[in-house]
Image (tube, rainbow, N blue to C red; front, top):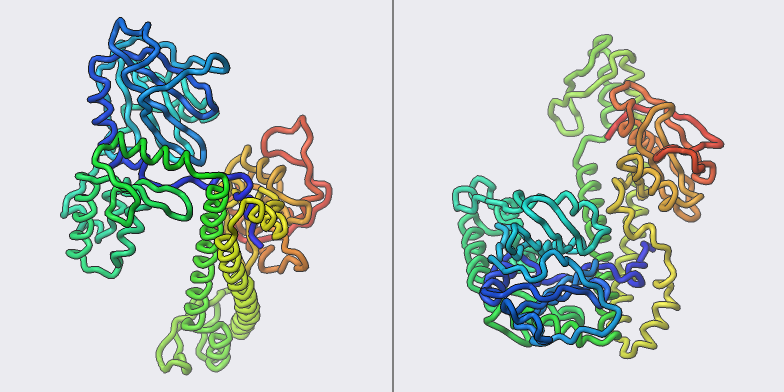
Length: 537
């Protein structure tokens, strides 16, 4: 069963529109009105992943209570701003941050165009950027165009943040929409998941181009002149700008942000864990459904396409018409009563070419068998997900929920598979997962932390290239076609990409080790086999 340790780690990102561009555009405008004539009096953190900013008029810093507070919660799984009327700073365990901004007047608030970011602009060309990019959210202090400090120092890429590039001007006219053939994502990349789901519910894909534009204009009306709604989805509060069945509604963005934050804060541990599990299960089910759909599409294509065995029969029936060293030949397809062009290997005789197609036909049948086996496994997984979701939703106490997680094994599955698909290039062939490293450091991560000793490890021989692994499946041997496919990838993602043939090392991971003196990406292979393959992406 696929890895579900995301439940324990709690890393599935909390979705909603609290950091959507259209909400931030309204919110930043209101923040600017509240900050007019104020200075930053204090900026501190007393909870991990939380920053509090207190503002007041100049010369009033001596007062304990501030005129306006911003509390920014920046966690990998949850990002939100709220604006408490009062905030009592703890007497200990607090840390002052961004001291360069203290006592500096506020010059304004800038919302970046078509981006989930805004900045509070201070005197002396300082800018505190609220970069609300999901699990990569951060607060970045900039002076001029140079980054001075980060709230989350671990997001090292933010050290190179260039605020002059944050604005994203986009042509969102009807003409541009027509040129994009109705693909709204090219014009409105900031709509977000909530809007995507709303458009899907309206049957967007089946509409005419005029009807699609009408729906886009309708949703823009909701986003640009919004009422703010808080609803509950999978036991979690969600902030949305779209009309929906909602528990509360607001016309002020600051009140909406506060309402959402306090609704989230009131969720008890049981509802939070229960909602997290349901969302993760549904996400896994959705991915499995996508795989099942893709396999059915592939089987349908294979069924409609001319079979290799049929090509072999056509060649054998017309051997006398095929000239020597021909690269292709047009013959009569007596299965479909029409001409067909057949590719040939010029270095083989007509009869040997036919034999080659017969060999491919055997592999074709094996591939269909593997696909059918994989379908059976995934469809059983789908049924299991449905059963698990129904079971979780029926549980009424935290004790019973945690007991179920333990007895079902959902809290003990190893972590690597959860994020391997996002960390590395991922392929699937005949039901087997293949992962490919992206660079030297990423290769080390794949081989040393995300590969088990039973997995198969591959690498182009004697040249630099990506580490490639085939994930082992209990009770199954690695089929030769799968090994050959992974070897083709190892050859392609190496310095031998343009060679006709490339030698590739194949060995179980248990024979691959790394010592401290080796550079990034370098390993020692104690036992190996070599296969010759054509590099192929």
